[in-house]
Amino acid sequence: MTNQFIQNIVNEIKPQKREKLEEKMLLNEELVPAEISELNIEMDNNPDLKQLLYTKAIDLPEKYKYLVGEIYEDYEDVCLYDLIIQSQKKLGKDKVFFSRTKQRLVGWAAYETDKLKNKVTEIKMFSFDLNKPNVVLLRDLYKLLDYLITKYDEVTWVAIKENPANKIYKSAINKYSGIIDDSNDKIVVYTIKSKK
Image 1 (tube, one colour):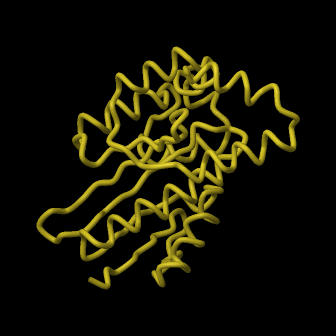
Image 2: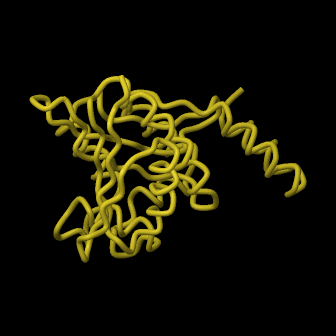
């Protein structure tokens, strides 16, 4: 069965039942190393995803502008697809992931490290699902943090204060007994110390 075939069946289900089915599909979500060829196939099967990834940052929904603005100084002409490609070149395939259900790709995550200090210095992620980005982001963040705190002594990342994802990040910090530093006027710094 193809992804499109499964999606057609899901679309024919009543909205309430479809939402519950989609929730169950997300429970089977996993972070996998990012393969651009897999993303290209996914975009061929999902025109909405292709449109999202190729939209210039200036025209993206607000929550995505924050992400791109946190990475690029002059971000208006950058699209999310560029971000994915450049992160893979800069960080390597072992630090860039797609979030995947059995049926489709639903998100992207990447992290950067300081090898000398054995710490993660940055995490960035976003959902491919405009309708339920928070559900995807929270699950992906927990999975990524579960992995990172077993491998590194410290995990730190920053976000612009106005970024709506800060609610999700604060939830993660509470779960992992981390530290929030919001003393800067523009950014929030999140830190989790490993308990290994």
